[in-house]
Image 1 (cartoon, rainbow, N blue to C red):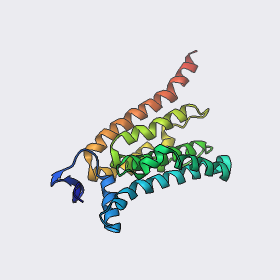
Image 2: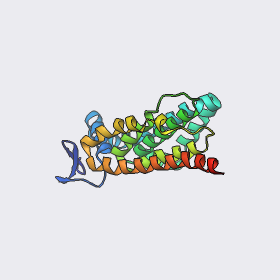
Image 3: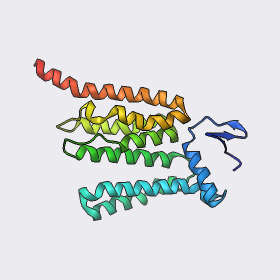
Image 4: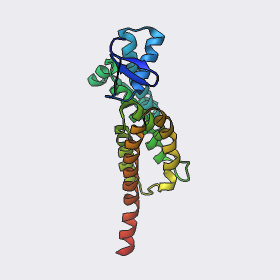
Amino acid sequence: RAWIKFHLWKPTLELRPYREKPAGYYWLVSLAYSLAGVNERAARSVSALAALVTVLAVFVYAAPRVGATGAAAAGLVLATSVGWLGFARYANLDMTLTACVAIGVLAGLAWLDRPPPRRPPLVPFAAIGLGTLVKGPIAVALVAGPLLLAALTRPARPGLRGLGLVRGTALWGQPTTEVAPGLVMSATLVMVLTAVAVTLAVRVPMIVNLTT
């Protein structure tokens, strides 16, 4: 309670605006305090819950691909790693960001695995939005970067229309704009650069094949 308090949408530290990080993680800590009281256990619970959600996401992604036993083993290896145990007990925003990134990437990979035609993905964009509220535009790169590389390795690369960039950006951009317009501007720039990279990755090989 002494280190961060809240005024409307923005966290404050010693009655001054706290702008080092976005407010998303601190909202969750404030919610934990309201449910369990202002204590160490409540402060750590956000990271612990994020770690649990990430392990479950790994299990859900792996189960249809390697079976329930293999998926449980993957989750167990992750949950018992020394670094994982440490960050799951540490009251900072890294594990919450990890949960957002893991869910976004795994959902995107699952979408890429589906045969076309397929509806544009939504979960990766929602994860980007939540990650942006937790730690800023870095969430865009951490989710879109691996998915871009994964898409480039597929024989049938998804087109821009199939990605649903406009709808996806609106999905995470609207709530983020209400809280932190500057984050949206930075994240949108990263998203545009990612879209350009996707376009080049899809179109350049086609142009080379046509001209050779």
